[in-house]
Image 1 (cartoon, rainbow, N blue to C red):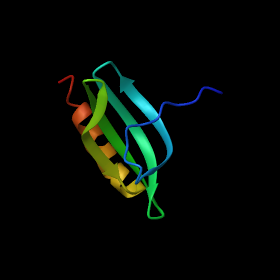
Image 2 (tube, one colour; image 1 turned 90 degrees about the horizontal axis):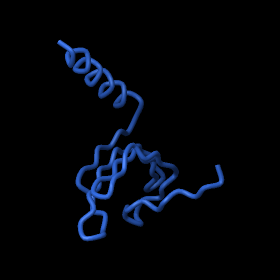
Image 3 (cartoon, one colour; image 1 turned 120 degrees about the vertical axis):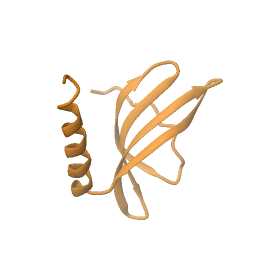
Length: 85
């Protein structure tokens, strides 16, 4: 893929290593983003909203380790089992 990714609406404080857009419309944009700051890498889930042509952050959820992710993943999977009940 030689297509360049769109620049994320993040503070210059963070160095973006990589990201994956989860969904994007004219009003909402969500992505999983791998960033680095002060030599520490984290993954964050972002949700931005487009107001008057400018993307602003609505929510951010940081995952700092595989253990954190396992806890979140297990909780979500347990609730997903109950969706069809």
